[in-house]
Length: 553
Image 1 (cartoon, rainbow, N blue to C red):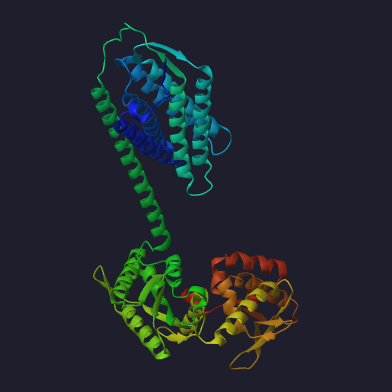
Image 2: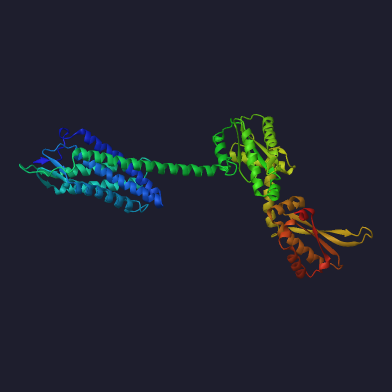
């Protein structure tokens, strides 16, 4: 009686055993990597990766089995029945596909492990079908408990492999899945071989070898080699495509598509290293650059001209940058320039002057010469802030101060700008509540005939009585109301209040009301008619005054 489990080194060709083990390990790693990629993809790509994963896994199981069998020096003659031999390959691939398909159908739940167990069952089906294809001299008997044990081991390790791929805890779980697949194949093979007992019989004739050992070995190695090479190539292509997609998304996230410069996110990424952890030893300057008259170019020549200006300015400035300098576009016509190793305000001012000179150069576009101005704000690190947000915010404040002084100005941040900005923000919030709280009132300025001196009417003047700040000058809150759009509601209140007051006068004097440019875009004639009907004021007594800016707009 011969026990097949007694696989002593003297009974094997170790070259075959080494080849079987190598194929098992490499194939398991590749199979589990492909399975992980299947779970991350959708659609047609998912289908193709599933096909390759099943093909590689099934081929790995089949090749490991037959390479090990070929390495065994069995007594007597041996042959393989072709039909069952290749049927075992089909079973291995089929159950691999089926098990992987079930595993990848869900992100959670028991189907993951069930699919892995189905894959393990396929290993057993391949093994015992392959053993049936092996013709040996003697009578074979099988030990049922060992067969059941081999089945439990294969299905258990198969479930573990699927679990490690589908439910990773660390980045090393992918290796755990590969190890579990190796154990599923090897435990099934050796336990299944232990279940077989061969009783040699004198005079028993073994059928003629349908396929020689050399043909079997060449076929196995060549076939699985091609399959694994093809799958590895597809895996690398998918990995590269994923990396290219990630890089593309990263580029979109960090780069301005029009100019190719870093965008706001890219600027933050560039500023992070030198400003890491509030390092006060790094000296750099941040310039907030806003293009003046850019809107006029867009309105007069179209957005194509505006885009050409932005691209030309960006290319021109970028081409002149020196070591330690970089430029970013963070908004429509807003740029930020940064220069490191700045130790004095004079150096920062020279950098700003150089940037302004480059921006002011004309841009040639379709036989036209287009030019823009720029207002620049300067913030220094660490003097004006330690973080990128602080520096950008304060450079912006300085830039807005420069813009308020007239086009083409350069301003350096001062702490008083923060206080002015805070006051403006508080005033804007209070302005929204002023109408509700009835904090506005109208004063009436007399209008006289220049020849006779007689009173001919009154002009309504808006005043704001702030409960805390007192009288707020109109030149402080009127521009703010226009910027926020509140001027429409405030202007409507002025019109209605002035007409209602004039209707109560004993003399039929005219009342003059100023109208903001924004009110002209809100169906002013209809609103005037409604107010006149509501208040009962004669139309001839109302005078609408348009400002020069309103007429120009």
